[in-house]
Image 1: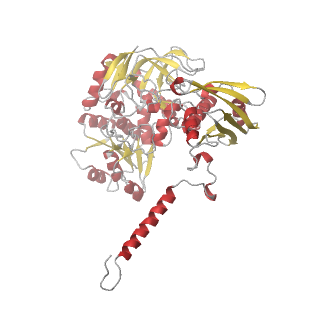
Image 2: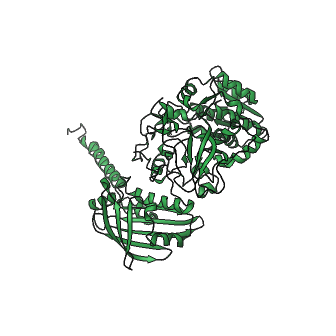
Image 3: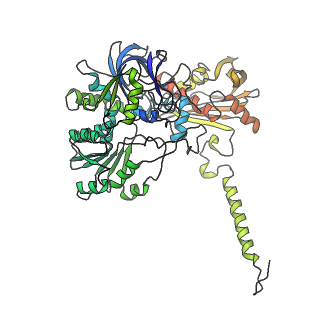
Length: 390
Length: 213
């Protein structure tokens, strides 16, 4: 089959590889019908995520049709159309039972767990297409993909919905929703969101559905800010205005009640320095420069909430811990527990309360994947979200 | 040292400073040196004691009854399912002895015989493995708690030994590891995966050998 494979910095290729096979009884094999490139894929593209190997297949946002099921999968049959969560969850461990699916104990192969333990103190769930620290699982930017624990993650989709209506249930829509939920929004609240990429836009959409009084989105790409306004948010271009002053005014001097960092680690923030003194393996993480997060913490009102869906992987440089402590802020974060939100969000989509298609700026065949990565990386004003069709 | 006009020697302050530095260095060295736990941290397992690097171990909570975990361990069946460097375990005789074949460095197999020295059904199994170079003592304990069964594994590679003990530890843990603690930790993790999900997680046909150094 054909698949998009990582071969180094800014080097994604369409490779011809073996089709995936059932390895465990609870696996399923999917024929991929639609898959997207994520903002976090760009960190892989930029070569700053450690433990990637040449030939690794990319992609963690995908959906498709079941081609084959293992003997242990009772709820799916060949021909079912499903959307798959980007994090693999076993459904049985302590964390899955607490609905902390992205913290699953059992989906990351034991040998790979050493890397996460060295870097973070504990290993988290296996992910599709996101380095060997998360299990080295082949991703879904391919014609076929192997889905472990297929009886837990994949969500069946009814025929009346188009692929683009539901594809983003795999990651970014639940991510935006969880980011807004972590703001603990009350009816008089102002939520300020840094980053008008797909996650920031879905977070804004979710915050408005949660009846925030006011949602303010901060970015500099005019195209993306326009999308935010379309959703009903106010917008600030940080290159044109002083963000803290503007936010203070828009909140009558109080500051936003909740802030969302939908930017995450800057792509150039990771280099080859090793700052993990316990790691015996070479997990090469270094300081990240969280400019957006720092500003969000400074802006947040006293006693407010900081929601961090943006991905971080290492240590942060000049993190304003004093501001967090002195203002008594609450930080809520984590890799999205997609399985927790999928059914509810699918209902909202079916009921017409959420439209996700506004986000898709480009649809291209899988064979143009390398070009798609380049566009997504370098033309962020025109390119909001690229969907690939194998 | 010169005498000062008032007759005192200038070296007094210097000596005092040097003495203080020596004491401080001694204190620092003493503080860093591994020592046996005192009363208040004797609750820590031996494999966590700094002065015993040859003792390795791990604990995990597994959502399965203690009896079931005990029986799986005691039967010696399917160890290769959760210890990938184990090629074969053959029970020998009626007194808990077993012959092990384990993959070592450069894919060469090595052998040792283990003997059970303590056997409390549902609770504890302790064994000795004779035959250099893999000789060690080990024990596994099963304790039911509200969150599941806590499985505590400990292996002592130095009865007695030192450098030889560490070499034995490395040998038993050689596949996919240069840290003997990994053997204990990964074995328990795979056992947990097997008991809680019915499968051992893998990204490739082998045991998720995607981990890179």
